[in-house]
Image (cartoon, helix red, strand yellow):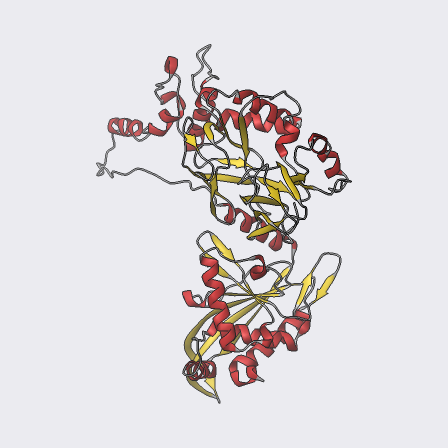
Length: 531
């Protein structure tokens, strides 16, 4: 598995264009691989017959892991698979050049004999570099349903998007590793598909046996809480007056603040199940007790019930939380705020839009002015890399775009060399792609400075968190009509506030202030932007 982006650690097989037994030539399209940023074509480096595929569609393969084996027809490749683990430990190198991917299941199956079991384990693929788990948004099949190759099996929510998972196998869905809205760890068991009478329990046990002791313990917990209801019902607490309830029911009751002793069980032997907790109405008990209470002053009864909804955090939101928390708590931020008179910018924009092929926004003007100011203040256009600092000679400006589950930062490259109309058209195109989730890695990688604009929402000013490894981010507020002093007299003017967040490890206060002074001069006299 090649590394197709700077942040990629695994690739997910979006689609195979070859199957076992097919002939493949060097340079021929073999698969489509989904990275953390985009779906890319993978061309074979070898000529021969496809002997083995290391992962099914929708499954993940680690960087330098075995993607496939290509060789002579009928050639014995078992030695390659048995040696793939040690080869990966040596840096992914092997004397046989025809190894192209590694499968997690191959090692697992070595512990227990699964010969003759006509079923396949489907693992949760890693669909982005920041993904630790995938949440089942929806199952399109249930246990016992027939599944065909290419048929939609489930929708999996990642930190980037909710993606459709299509089956690569024909057979019956024998086992589901998690219910809807539950999470499955990367490389955890998502499902098992095979023949109706296949011994999937042995296959699952073989897969679990490959894991280390901590992993096996984690798998055990997962099996108790997320797998078939039979497993959950097997554990009952029934003696010495203790309440009979499933572990999941106890956890749900505790999370919801319910007294589990007041919940009536409908399971075997009066055992409390998940459904009993979900249907329990806690408001009934307080109503009864309040009716008995007496008070010297009669107050009217206010009918109401406290309620709330716990919404699972999306994978994108988790990634944003983790990345920005790391930035906020590791980079010493300081902030510089400046007011800019936008009267001339408003007049200039009106004139430019009369002849421009595309409508120019104030954000486009800010972006162009920022690029020009960075060219004049190169010490702001830097990146903090831990043990060294990179002074960027090029100017790539990231423009934060809000999407449904969070935000993404597409990049306008060489912004200082582009005209305003070019920038306006490019920003609109990138924003459209971001909303449609069609951005490619080259669209969001490599920014040297970031702009976040909330002015269109009526926000006057705010502070933004730095987008690492950039050293600065500019927060842009809205243009507000207010009283200003002009030539010693009060007058009505249009003012915009901007706040520069700086990483003090790379940028000092005087450097940031000089940049803002240049930016202010450019926006207050927009003709200078064009020079």
